[in-house]
Picture 1: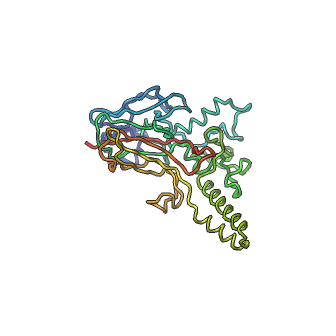
Picture 2: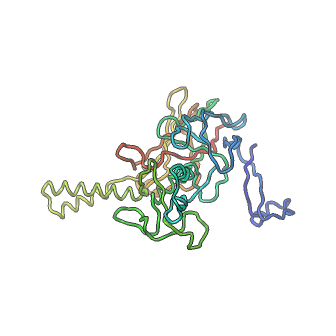
Picture 3: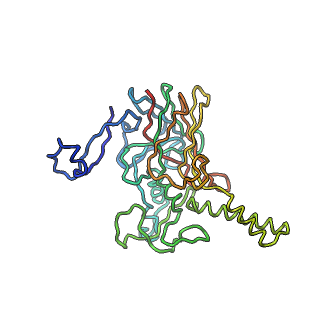
Length: 350
């Protein structure tokens, strides 16, 4: 049986921890047993850091099962497959803000380090308690793990990186002033408290930035949806006018095209295989605007914590591959957001 550390307030657990009543500390470091999931916690990693291994690596044991995790390449921005992390930065980087940037600015390397602080962090509503986890870069076919012994994967835990959560929820700029025409916050707008910053002092308010990969500008996911719907409406309007319709008829065409366009998602596709033959796929949405998830048309969210994904429908597998896609792409068809996600808590059936 493995153990996970949980930090519990004495007052909250006094009933269940009578035997520990002599403890005088306000917080208790209590080890609570949990099922034999593959958690990567046996792998050595410095606190609040990350590592991109130079070669595939194994995790697990005889009780949980053993998997081999794939990774190709190295470095913070050019790897494919999975990196190992335990970071949990949940705010916009302070030194990228025009209100908190150091005197004299920052170097390109320092800027990348700030971006990486979000790209290699899991976004959770409260401080993360899972310790080590994987950060998958899944824009190709390298984000997979193999099972030493074929088995049914009962479930995995999946979350967004902080990088994608912030971009999909707020965009590359976050302030207190929203421009409806551009569907983005203004960098010269009103100052606001940084996300997840508990300090209520107005001196800590500012405008915040976070460039998307390759330095591009990203809208929040709802802004992407709105701009695409407007574009569809405008195209329909222009086509109607060109066809000789009246302005009223063209406006009706605009409204219909606007209403009928459905877009705005980030989707993880999980594929199982056995002996090279695909056994099935599971789609899991990391973010979804209304009507983009066909099984859950009312969904309207950006995933903000670890969530269990049932993979039993894949059957017995010896390989699990992860791919990520989004409706929000650039002119080359590449995702505007980072093609990454977080993975932990892999449970194999006995």
